[in-house]
Image 1 (spheres, one colour):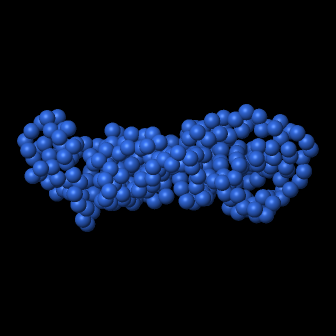
Image 2 (cartoon, rainbow, N blue to C red):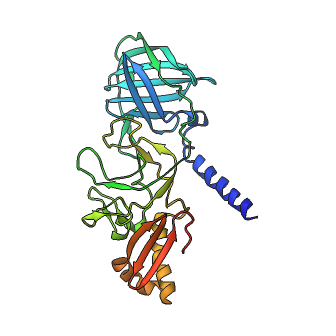
Image 3 (cartoon, rainbow, N blue to C red):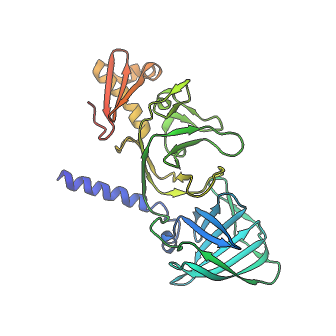
Length: 316
């Protein structure tokens, strides 16, 4: 019975994640989240940004944006806007690779739409001249396994990079995924000088609250990925954003990070035989995550020690 219940919970969890991109039409959900196209002998890599009736992609460096829309039952219409005034258009099958014929024309890009990640994309193109024929090359098919609703699981330690006021905002990086948008409760204050509560900071690779290393505790992200960020990154393989519907947990457990930190107070209170609210502020101020050894994390408050198995979430 326990096995059946666990299986149902797992299926339910996966189903929830699979619904994250329902704002996209069903046909577009199968698009690869990274697209690679050669234009005039130069390869451009695009990462999925956002979408509704069209899937919007952005280039890491260049002032280039791309949209993909369903054209027929078996084809897609791809539009690539270069520097706001050159529009490349072609229609192609979802699994086509290699060279394809396209048209290029001068356009007025018109108005743009802002995304949740403070990016933008254009949608109203007014022709400014006659179209010309060109050839572009698809290095990979539009559709694939690394699609827009693929649920990824990344486990590892997290490193914090504060906003530099120019090229990027606060980054909390777990295996090349910026999870700063995940729910960290009251343990992170998001702004251009992102602040972590001391207990949260102790779990990171570097402890930004003190001049010493953190414990490099493992965390797990489960969810979708997107490229809807204003951060300067080198390419679409070097950094992705965690979808804000995803889930960030401690170790390989299913325990959300803020709930795990909260639980330290309750476990200490249980050992001291007092009510948690009576010692809450003192534990938050004086408690310490002290050691991590063989996936066992120790927390100490005065003469009380709590140990947690980060594989199972069980107390030891």
